[in-house]
Image (cartoon, rainbow, N blue to C red):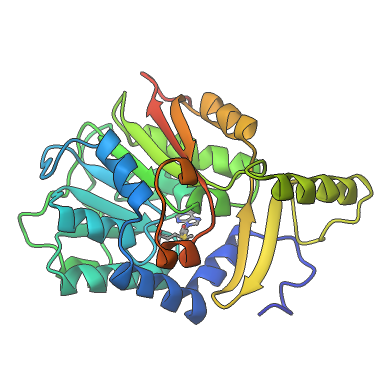
Length: 296
Ligand SMILES: C[S@@+](CC[C@H](N)C(=O)[O-])C[C@H]1O[C@@H](n2cnc3c(N)ncnc32)[C@H](O)[C@@H]1O
């Protein structure tokens, strides 16, 4: 795997293949089954969501992976949950876990940058989820007939947790995803997501100063497309991640129909236990609200 992607610039197809890789599937499935919500996630979710069951409050989870967040929200009592991910293997795992826990969550196989082309989302915010809506078969098993399948006025809140937005290569594509998410939400809907932060510590800042020199000299890793990109390999396989600074995210929100509300480094929200710190590095939580009319 690492060989075939060694010198080619990273693409969305490569990122998707990385997430469908058995090592990644095992990693995220294990977390969905055993880890659940981080303390910081729970705190921020309590801040932005009404208390459960919130049956009239459709929540959308983008980049749901194997269902870690959606299934945990269902366990807290939330009743109106939809998740999607562009890695088929992970969505299948999310559907299986929901079925196992008897959780009525609708999961879709969809790309955040192409929601307007997906039958389940194309008409959201402009009508109901279309008749062509096709939850993945595994997920359907976990959805009793009474489960909500339509969101005529759009989703009331959207989540993109554990840095999924930053795993979309190229700034223009991340902006496209933010616009597409705004388009399926109600005006005022909160968006909660996380990113890394290039400035979160002195050592991080120092390493990015060195990286800036490499880019200035044209000596950066040829697989990378933009300054801030990183590609690495570990026990969960190959991973692409764009690491922004705070100014970059503020600009992305302003350009895509979202109004920034607040942002916090995770360490300022909660002291996470060891298993969470092993699963995930320091990150920044962002809350934005959908503007009155999303930008086209
Ligand atoms: C770091 S994983 C987090 C998974 C899950 N949210 C969790 O916290 O365990 C990021 C997820 O974002 C998904 N993702 C990345 N780009 C995506 C896109 N364009 N559309 C939908 N999902 C995407 C990946 O497939 C992956 O499941």
